[in-house]
Amino acid sequence: MRELPAGCGAIRYVCPVSARWSCLAGIALFYVPFLAWVCLFIALFAWGGAFGLALTLLVAAVIGYAIYFVMILTSQMQHRGVRVTGQDQPELLAVVDKVMQQAGIKRLDGVWLAPEPNAWALAGRRDWLGRRHVGVAIGLLMAAHVSADELTAILAHEAGHLTDPDFLRHSLAARRRSICRKLKFRTSWPLRWYWRWVLKVTREQGVAVERHADAVAVRMCGADLAAQAQHRVAEASCVHAIAMKLLIRPCWERRIAPATFFQAYEAVWNRAPERVEAAVAAWMKAPEKPDDTHPGLAERCGGRSFPLAARLRGDIPLAGLADLDRRFAVSLRWQEARYPMKTMTWAEMKAERASQKAAKNGKAPSEVAT
Ligand SMILES: [Zn+2]
Image (cartoon, rainbow, N blue to C red; front, side, top):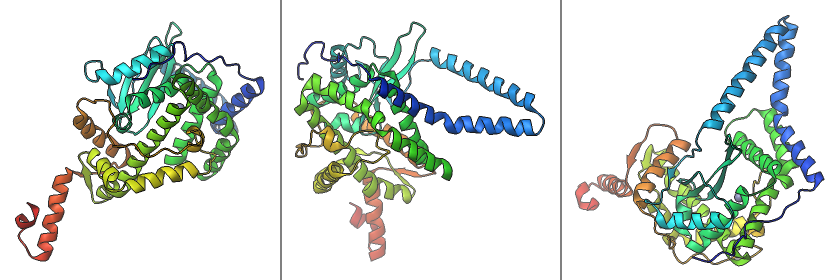
């Protein structure tokens, strides 16, 4: 693992006043639909002669939110996935501890392995002593794909988020991500138009938080390694997307839930590397869109292209990878396709297909399936 220069996480940063106001305006835009609903609600009650009742309900809602806020303050940080401990994954945790230490983060509330193929900084609320709860989530496929040095650069980027002194732009970026989720899952037509406009006008301030984290990664690990690490994350994301499109979602459509995903990832990597290469190249050339929460991949890779990694598996030993793979296959399935399915291994699916083919050709299933 690469040695990091001491104190490299600290970057002096002074937020320009104009950027501060832009962030505040962007955050305010996020609450406009909610405030419009509240005003409409009060106006309707006032029109019906029950203005006092509307105000009582409003006060009750504010008290309810205050209780909820206090409960959040006292709760531990949680994340979807499997919490990593020093006993389970000593090598992985050694990389995390080293980067966080160098970045000046003294207390990390938790490290989670997650089903998605990238990594996130988890910045929670502050506790009663004013210390912010912070954690890191690492995608299993990404952790399995990268080298220890590349993971160092990826975690340096996440440490850049956790040490970002500009709370306002961090807050704006979180709200932009929330808008993207709203647009993906549920929102009415007029709001859809409004949220798209908000994403457009707040884009530059929104992605500034990622540019800051990228700069921290460059400072901690060097431009070459930081760019290469971004490329590896893109490779893992493309392998996941291709496996989902070609192998996993077609199974879900047939009401079959593959018990594991890594065989599908291996199949994509070994049998169709040109697809992965083309997907990463297309991502490199993709024009930037208002709803991007990150700068373009070309910018993050410093305008450079890298050859694909030699293998799908990197050099970080991950204990219980098969078990984690099974758990995350179930988790992603429930997240994206919530209808009854029959769980099958890839070998069982292959045997079933062979048996159906044999039945079609008039042969005994056992002749083909073995
Ligand atoms: Zn980031």
